[in-house]
Length: 87
Image 1 (cartoon, rainbow, N blue to C red):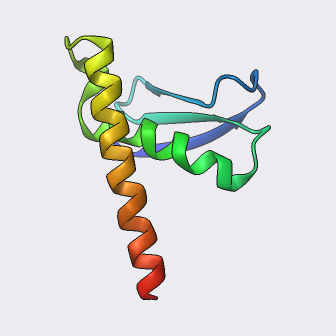
Image 2: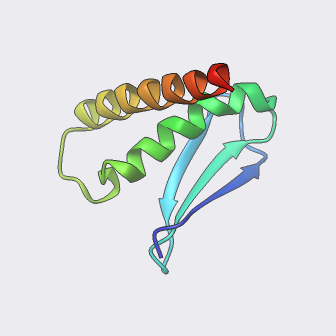
Image 3: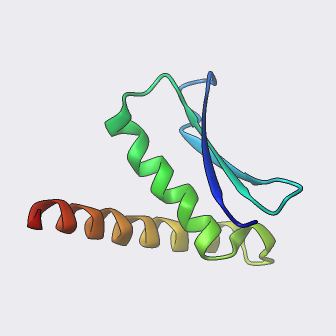
């Protein structure tokens, strides 16, 4: 329960990613398989941020949700980059 699974699917290129909660309460992040791994990272972190921030059950305005997710994703990407640089 509340695990995150990543699934690569063949969707139009303009859809970079989406997240959906399944019946078990787990999160499924769907990313387009048409992108290279490096191009999938930002959409992955963005969708993970939605899960971390509880957006799938939120009554907030969509613009607020997307802004929060983008800020959190940017922070998560920065943290990952810092850890890689430190070795």
